[in-house]
Image (cartoon, rainbow, N blue to C red; front, side, top):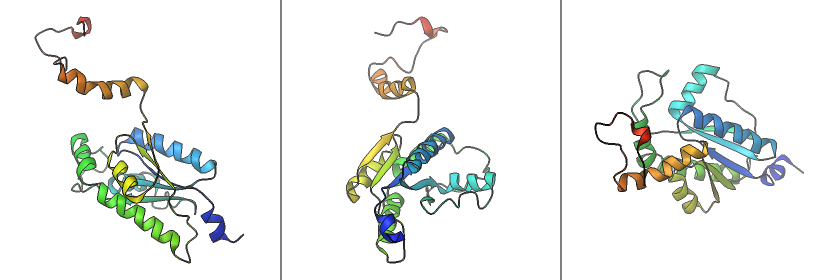
Length: 189
């Protein structure tokens, strides 16, 4: 079997974490497990975080393997003057909802177009594993026609807090108000 035929028989997962260190670390570990099980992996970072990797680990640190590649998409934020600091969380969250869908969709199309080219040994994208905090990937997967798995790299307690917070705000329970200094003894009904 030639390398092109072998590549086309592999599943090709695109893995995209939220642009935060713990999310990137968890998705990278998960991607390595998928790769170990035979997947072709394309790991997608924002340009900001990709450049932080390169600065920290060296210019060739993300060269990867032929079947484990790193790609970047722009987050649409102005360049940060302090590359050693984490991006402002509120700006990054806003960028996720407003800026990342078009470049991510374009990357998926580019990966599939490259798989069709006669000289490429990369298989077409077969699925997306996305951080659950990257909802634009749902739209991209629907538009391209790919299955999507949402991965929440946080604890169960954090996930439940995240999911329940809007209800607590709606009921007027959160954020906590008043002059009480000890909110730990407050009964939440």
